[in-house]
Length: 446
Image 1 (tube, rainbow, N blue to C red):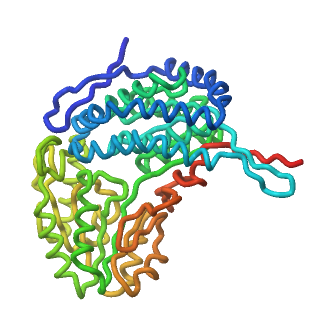
Image 2: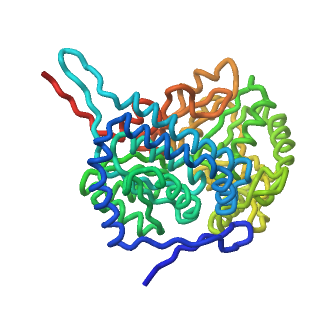
Image 3: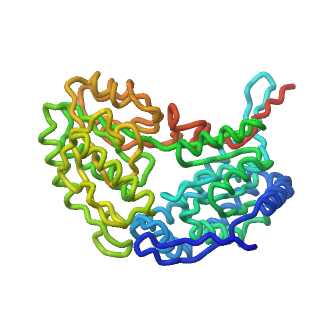
C-alpha cells in the first residue's frame, strides 16, 4: 500500500501537496544505487565534480522565486527571508564547492609524504525544517565534492520544497548521485542503520543522541549540529540601544525558530531598566502575519506542537514569577505574538531548554562571574554573545560555546567553521577543516 506524507500550510492548515513515503525496501535499494554510482562520481575528480555542481546549481537560478514561495507556504517564513535563503542556497552551492575543492586537494606533509582525501562512500544527509534548503545545502555540497554520493532525508515538515530542489538539481547531476527519501522518524532510523558510511545531521539534541546510538554498531562517521540555548551577556558599559536591537532581532528571527537564536539574556542590574525598556519598545514594533503580507516580521509557527511548546515555556515562566512586559501565554494559533519577559530564574524551563519561538527572556546579574556561571550552566554550547567594551573580550574567552560573538552575532567570517561545543555538536562543517570531515584522510609515504 502506498503511504503518503501530506504537507500543510501552517497559516491555515491547507494541504499544499504530498510525497510518497519511502519504504524500508526502497531505502535499501536507494542506498545500493548510491553505492553503484559512487565510483563513477569519484572518478570525475575534483574539477569534474565541481563542474557538475556549478552547472546544476546554476540551473536552479530561474526557480529561486518558485522555491521561495513554496518554502514560505510550507513552513511559514516570510517571503523576504525565504527569498534570501533560497538565493543564498542556489548561489552559495558553487561557492561552497569551490572552497571544498581547495580543502580536498592532495597536499604534501613533507619528507616524501602526501595527504589525500578520499570519499567515504555514501553520505546520509538529514536536515531540519527551519532552514530547509540552506542547512541541507551546507551538508550536501561538501559531501558531493568529497566524492561521496548522497541520500537526503528532509524534514517531514518541509518535504515539498526539498523535493523540488532535488528534482531541479537532478536535471544535471548524474543518476543516483543525489537521491531523496521521505518520511518521519522511522525512515530516518532506517537510513541511519542502512549501509551508509557517513551521517550528516542538523536537528535536535535528542535525535542526535539516538542517531549516535544507532550508528555506533558500525562506527559510522558523524557530523552533527544539535541546536542550542544561546546566552547573551550585556555588560555595564554596553551600547544599550545596539544590544537591545540585537537581542530582539536575534530572538525573533525566523519566528525564533533558529538554532543560534538568542534564548537567554543576562544584563547587568545597573543598566537593566534602560535595557528592558529599549527591548520592549523595539519588540513592540514587530508584526506577525502571513508570509506575503507587507511589513510582517514574524510568520506563523511551523505547527501546533511547536506552538504549544512555546506557550508552555511562557506559562511556566509566568507561574514561577516572571514579569511579562509584552505578549504572554495567551497566544492564538498559528502565531506567537512578540513576547518579552523579565525575571527569568534558574528553575524556569526556558532557562534550561530551547524555546524556539519569538520570546526575549531576560535576567539581571550583579557580577560578571554570576552571569558567566549561569550562561555556561547548560548542556548546550552552540553560540554565545557578549555586548560591552572593557571586559567583553575577556568575558568571551570564558564562554563554553563553539562560536562567540562580541557586539555582534556568531558565525565568524572568512574561513571559519560552524561548530558547537558540549552537546550542541559532534564534528563540524564549513571551513577547510570542516569540508575535510566529509572525506577519508589517507597518508601516502615513499
